[in-house]
Length: 113
Image (cartoon, rainbow, N blue to C red):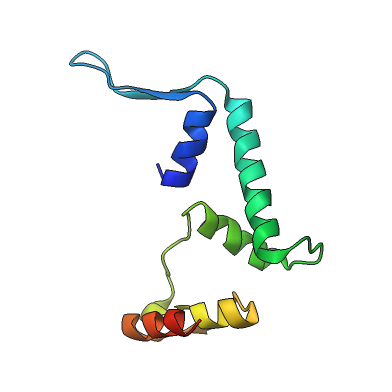
């Protein structure tokens, strides 16, 4: 479980039963509705903090933001390691254009941002 989601899970009464030699370990939550509400509130707060109160954000940008926010971004399945450019994302809000820079170039782009 990612750190952000785990924090919200605990706030909603989440707990872990480690089990024993006769039972499987089990994650449970006392209030699933509160858990969902906390996730939505956290996401809305973070989006407003990042983008302001803009009602005209493109859906692709919102999808990528949600995945990144909760640590769910998918690894690139594109051939030749194509991925979105962190520089283009940060500076131009371009979350669709793919590039093939190597890991060092990605670090340099992120440092430039």
